[in-house]
Length: 114
Length: 111
Image 1 (cartoon, chains in turn brown, blue):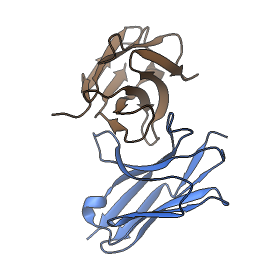
Image 2: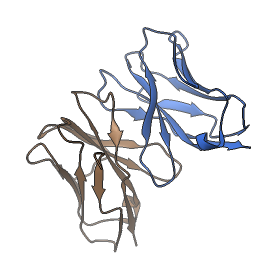
Image 3: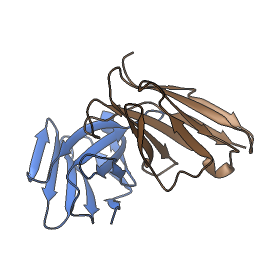
Image 4: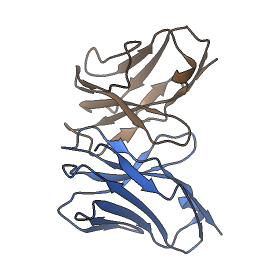
């Protein structure tokens, strides 16, 4: 499978716990995005990387959220001290160039905070 | 100014009919307008996209109509099929930077 891969597909956690998601973009894709999607809504932008550099973070991204892309390949998104409001689908996407054209999404990680 | 408003929220169409989904934007600096299709349990997939220098783009049964003066664009699905049943999102971006998505339209095509 040469698409965007996300792991795990589902995560159930208790409020206050930390969780980490992984995204493997399509090989040689320079841009990597994280989005969050709640039921009945469109994806909301969280952050993006150009290679290993994190270029923008949404104001939605509180200081409990941190994302990394250490070698410009895979990326991780960590949520500390999870809250019930963090329950959502977390989507990763990658594109081959320097923008969001031809953006390919993974199938997402569904987070449920109990 | 960063919003993209999408309508209708849901749409029911008979097989063979035309499905039309509309979006409106506020930021006149937006320069890239894609449509995405999402099936349950999957991430969105790029369907078709347009830039503001053209008024229409067609790919197979899918057409984007773009009205720059009205700040609106729409997706037309001709000869709609049951397999087209999915949620459709419009989006917009500036300098093909981050995409701002609409709220989605759930399309159901009945045989």
